[in-house]
Length: 397
Ligand code: CTP
Image (cartoon, rainbow, N blue to C red; front, side, top):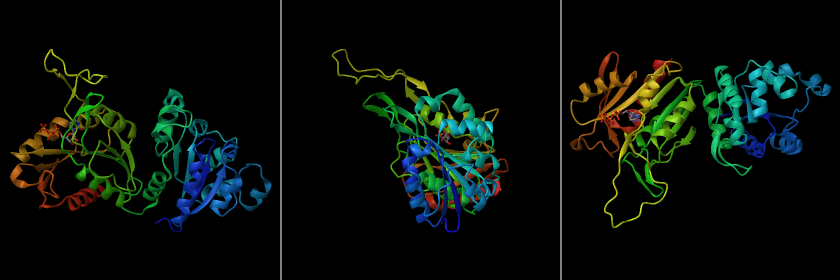
């Protein structure tokens, strides 16, 4: 898929630099040419020899290396590639990029280029959460830089949280999406999918029967058309598709936070079956049987993710698509839902038991837009996803 593509890979100074060695290997397996650039700090984590051995070519390290200037000036070096990838992108490198510094080879290349840039941030969770880094991140997104990750998890520094660099294959997927020549190439699309789990106590939760099949099929179809897909999924039955950035959440609140963090996007597709309520004051200890009788659960309303994003005053995605599962008066109910939520389209389906749609492989949907209702013939969920992805490509085109 990446045959003939040229990636300039800037390896910053972070423990995640070891993953960049695997990234080089994966990219080359897919046919890409990789020109590596190693920062001074990067050299503390991986050796120039291992980088150049895996890339199969010289690693560029110094701005003032006259030999390199004679072979290829830094301006030219920054422009021969189809994509510049910074992995790991440290807090320091991000700050330099946001400010436009050019005091070493990496920052100079990034400033001198007119080629698209993708970064895979990696840093300690506190550094990631710091308002300075978040400010820089916003700036970089506004500058059109594609951001992959970071993921949440245990970190080398012993802390837990967001800050781990995205896995090499996630970065490869984002690169493939970016360089594909499908109609959604260059478009960034958020898809929510699956159920949410709302805790009662540390071992019990309230859930629903959503399998995540339709949302997964939509994410896959959008990625196949070249979109960069941010797939925010609750605990679904079906595995997430390859080639998308996967963000796993449990609760509606976490899903809203992840959806917000994914912005800006060109479109948001809200296919998740979000729990409308959560248990108010979920216990942080396991509830025990007691002589005093049965426990009483009280509920609090969850945020409506589709409505919140649809009604954002600043940064609303240009296309917002919601779903409606109805058992009667499908068109009337879905049309009212579209107005209530403030989204652009509603994909409505009739889930009354006699249709066999709920939990089945087929779907029969009606697409509600500002132009009215359009019935689609009954087809399998994959075909629904492909038809919807094609419509989205048309609308964003
Ligand atoms: N949705 C959401 N956040 C919620 C609830 C729903 O984002 N807290 C989104 C779903 O992803 C879906 C749409 O809103 O796109 C469904 O709206 P909802 O009001 O839940 O409709 P139904 O599930 O069809 O239920 P009801 O008819 O009871 O409103």
